[in-house]
Image 1 (cartoon, helix red, strand yellow):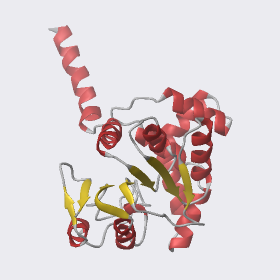
Image 2 (cartoon, one colour):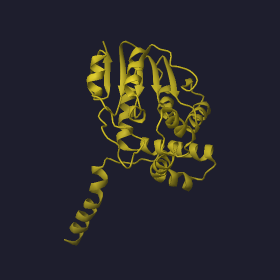
Image 3 (cartoon, helix red, strand yellow):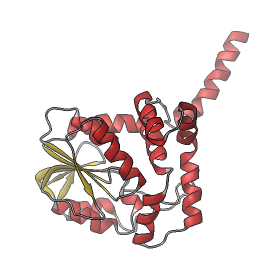
Image 4 (cartoon, one colour):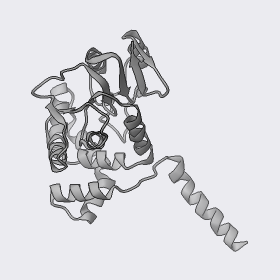
Length: 247
């Protein structure tokens, strides 16, 4: 009976963890890369991985950016965002999503708002894709991505959105965890659609965020129905909420 009761208690303790879908799986090669780039030891990297989300949120609240320029400046100078992204990408949901993206992407691929560049790196290891382009604003995260891609000799075009525009058309455009970070997501979606080939695939997430949370103060609630807007542009939803095909 005691053993059964202990087993029951352990199950209760694990339940919230699984319910939240965290499923953290530490990416040791990425941890080593972060340690090397930022001159940290493994213990320090783990600390920043686990605490960067709150540190980044606190820095956002202190900085209180309001305009597009101020928001871009925040992402340029925050030292915590790359760690927040790395930890987020180690969670089960993100690992599954990224595996699905590898299965559904094809042809000439653009990763817009590509952050730390780890997805581009994974894409570059697949021989079937014609080309891969990384695009994001300049700053600390962008610089880490350039270093990471260069370290791995990845054949990836890099676009600094502060200095140049994307140049389509592309077969696949990836825009994950991006539109909730910008003030004019409609303009971005329209621009991405204009750079997508007929029959091309737009992989886009967070279409239903409606309000800002205390945990993620840098996320803006969408003021429009994103799915209806995508449909108005001639895009059709297929298989997953994040997969859209251009007519």
